[in-house]
Length: 411
Image (cartoon, rainbow, N blue to C red; front, side, top):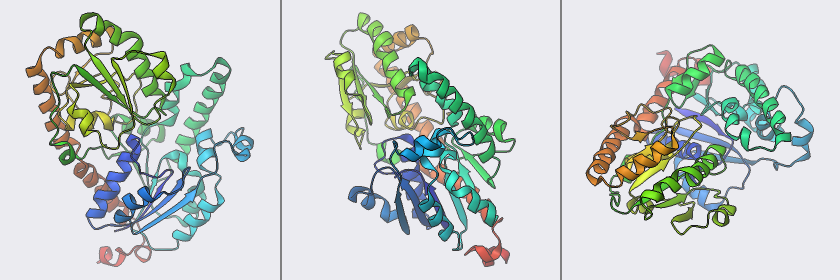
C-alpha cells in the first residue's frame, strides 16, 4: 500500500511512548513492503541521527519546522474558542497545510493522521476532497489535562480548566470526522466512543520482544527501576509520590534498596531536592537493557491513566517483575498477581516492594509470566497486524481512481 502518514513530531529519538510507537509501527509496516511517505511538523530540526534512523523505513521523509512555542501567533490565537492551545501550537500552519494539499493530489491507499491536536491544518482539505482517512488518538487530551491541574499555580488553574473544556469540544468535533478512528487500548477506545458516538478500533502499544529477550534482571540487586518521559505531569507526580511517601517506608524496613530513575527531561532540581545516595539519577538512555540487567524490579507508581505504558511493556519483555498501580496498567489486560503486583495505596506498595525483594523465586515467576504476556499480546508484530486490518478497510473506501490498489481491488 501507499501510505501518507502525518506526525506532529519526529519519532526519533524514541524519548516517549508515542515516539516509540510511531517508530516501531513505521519500521514494521515498511518491512511488510508498504511504501510510506512521512509528513512531519517538528519543533526540532531533522538531525543526521534521526535521518539515518527513519530513512530506511520511508519512501519519502518530509520535515517542516513548527513555529516556536512562544510565537506571537500562539499568544494572539490563544483566546480562540474553537481551538485548544495544543491545537493552536501544532496548527494554524499554512506551509504544512499547503504541502498536505499537494500530497493529496497523489493517489493513496491510506491517509493516516496521528493525534487530534495535529488535525487543524488538514481538516478543510480532507473535507473538501471527501477522501477516506484514519485518525489515531493515543489518549484524550481533555482527560490528560487533569494530570497536571493540581501542579499549576492557582491563577493558571482556571485557564487550564477552560482549555480542557475547549479540548473536549475539539475532540467531539474531530473524532466524528474520520472514516476510521484508532485507540491504543480498549479503555481508551471506550472513552473515545463515548465522545464520538462511534465504534473505535484498537491498535495496541507494543514492544520489540526479541530485543529484550536476552535480558536477565539482577534479582538480588535491591535496585528498583523507573523509566518515564518527564515532560508529562503523570510521571513527575509518580516520582514525587515515590520519593516523598513510598520509598521512605521501604527504607525503614530495608535501607539498602536503591531507585534508578531514567528518562527524557529529568528535572535538574530533583538531585538537590532529594539528595540521597540511594537515588540514582540516570536520565535518558536510548537502550535500556543494561539498566534492566542491573535492576531487580520495575516500579511505576502512576496515578493518572491514558494510553498504555510502553515502558511497563518493555520492563515485562525484559523479565523484570513489575509493581505498579491500577492506572499504571490501564489499557493492558494483564492479570494482577500473575503478570504484576499492584495497589493504589502507598503503604501497600511499600509493603509489596519489601516483601518481593526477599522472594527471588516469586520475582522470577512474575518476570517470566510478564515476558510471556507481552510476547503474546503486545509484540509490535501484533500491533502492526491490527493496524494493517484498519488500513485494509480504508482501501475498500478509496475511489478506484485515487488508489494505486484501486484497480486490483475493483477486480
